[in-house]
Image (cartoon, rainbow, N blue to C red; front, side, top):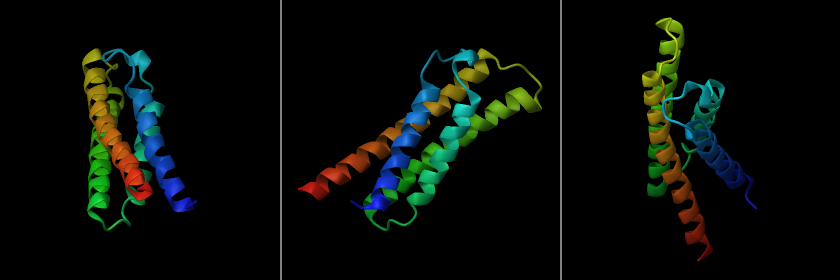
Length: 127
């Protein structure tokens, strides 16, 4: 068993599951989406991106691209959250929350693509 592949698979899967945990629930209900879970999803996604830098293959480039997409969308979601609650001194509105959750949904899609790529790579190695 290759420890590097285990760590890589762990972080890819954890990024997707944390993102799903934040995304799941009513789109516009701020009480159903935890800001700490969004930050955890962002941090794990950034760690996953760093782990993907070493691969020089075409599949590695696609892995990195999906991770960068997820990072960008989670950064935008976190920025909107901070702006809505701290800078603008407003309460979180359903409109803000729907944009944040929508951005998280896009990141979730990128994470799912990354998991599918990882599984397909494993299947190819087995054959």
